[in-house]
Length: 635
Image 1 (tube, rainbow, N blue to C red):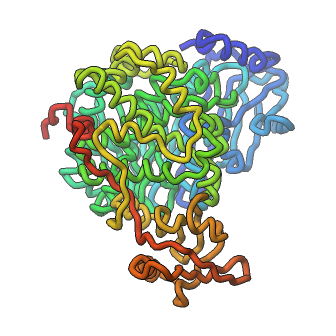
Image 2: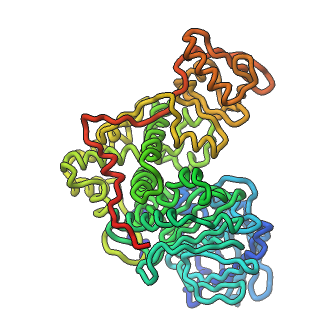
Image 3: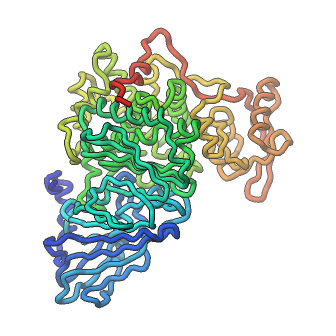
């Protein structure tokens, strides 16, 4: 594809990028990158690049803006032992004092190739998405953007790379990157563009299993590549495999076309790696606790991850906001349309497709939606920061701390996107008497012609115009209102339209309960207005809740409840007693740094958790939305 044809904004932004880069040779030969991951158990990976060059000034870039992470978080601190050489002689280099991801050098006369060697040291701390810890003693997750430098002067689809990978003896791997040959522990891949290389991560490990999700010979093919810290963790139950086969069928049905030649669900199962999901065009990198697939409760809690990342093959990779479609990995991305890129994916993938594939139960699906809505309905930050600003500031908000997130707001375009697109879906269904739905929008917007990966950009106007083609409505007015308005309460129109109400009672919400178990937290958000870590440390407070009003804030610690040492069970019993008594306040002993104080909360509502309650006066649209639409695949 030609990036210069993507619009005047991109074309204008690339003029300065290409000026003065005379050392890049027109690529008669590709750049080679040899990666030695045989030492990954020590969390160190070795890289050797050979870059065709000609004499003169040369700038090499380390990828900065990482697709799918929407932020300039390329882990440049992990690059160590960098050395450049040409014709056997060391070439000195210096870092650009403004763009810290740019390495500058002077290629000596007579040189036709520049050798670049460095090591990638894998962090041991959790977090940071793909730049967090990504290796254990038994597996490794390799992202090519962390293992290369590339010359300035060409866009990422104009640079050709030939990659090779050496793994520890006996390890196997999964990737969407096309394989040329494998000899022993080393695999050579076919030539691809830099864009495709960075879009094709690798999972590898001593314990590996590939699970076919489409029949042999089917085109396109779909497989799941699993690596784990133990062989036992790979025992994905047959009924769960059937659900993932159904997911593939449901996604094709929802979008009406596929934009990949083969798709790999890459899954790493370990307690020692980051836990998240990163989308790619022909694969997704999904990282989960080791026992996720062999523990029923964990499997249910994590059921929406793979459907979310799979959906991105259509929404985010194939159809991509023009403001997020940049010529290389140094040009800043603009995140203003993430309420479509991520918000619609959260609705269509995490909610709709997860339910249609049978990866969760109707009860779980209802509690998941109730939890999503309630978290926003108690978000004090909605009084000053609108939905649009959570998307625009995404590159900063992704790394913001959990503390004070209720007042700050985080990347709320995920959960609020669910409510927004549910409202859109229900309006379409109501205005067409159930004849049309969000499925028709997805067909029109994300469908088109099946084939290999490509990018089709869009703007806000394209979203509005496609919705208008599905059914006439003031879509521009609705979306603008939802994006720009301030309100202490969440937009619950979609839930109400669907024939349900958001209510609160003393019965725990299954989604929230599972989250507290997984994160070792205790949520009293909808009663006392605070969430606690396992040891009683205050994680966050609701800006309009009783705890905040009483002077409690994050980092303080609940030491005792009504004179007795804090425990989750004890606090719940105290809430029940306060509700029964109806008068005596709840007394908490709080530790703030090394000072103690007693606070009294005049709250008597007992435990409160969010749920959906049926409105019998309206049709149940949630059942219609979540009901399977595709035929069940053959076993």
